[in-house]
Image (cartoon, rainbow, N blue to C red; front, side, top):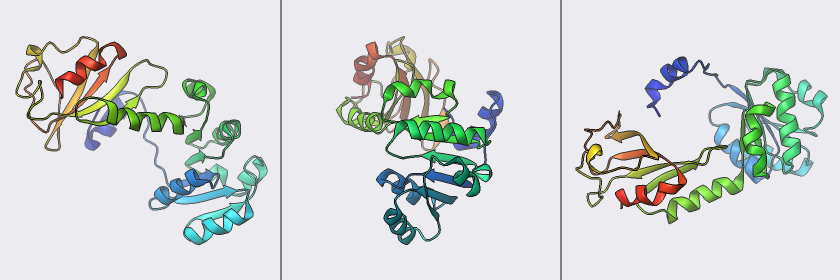
Length: 237
């Protein structure tokens, strides 16, 4: 957990390299692809490969700044001719999970720095790093995270699961009525199977040690194991 100003230092400490993204290729012009184009086209040079000709015309009208290519994304020669080697990121968003994964592996083989694949089978997600795809996303899992956000107790601002690990990361907002408000962390018997990653107070980040006193409107990020989720929620009601 870090503020934006600390990202480079975190990457340095973990031995990671920050990748500058300028050119992005998106495979698939579905609704998901269209939303991705809308967001990415504002910041990057976007190339889209879509096999449906009519859909290509629609995307070209909607996004005149993006390069729309009519073709089959499984055609490696087509991808190479359209500058695959020059791409910094490759995002596969077709309706076929296997096509998305394989095309991402092709992109990796052509030295694309970042690959993202949309998959329907959640069993594929924990395998992403081992098979060479940087990130796999699943619509059902994303929807479930949004649903959990509203059924959890306490003021949950956001929630996410850690792929391959039976744990969740939740972001709470401390209310004046919360059990943890105006209390030191060491005095509230916080569960041992939950870890407070950090606290944001008025735009500044804090590490919550034992003598840290929580205040109303603090945003608290907690790594939680399943068996203690309800106990953690009780502190932020």
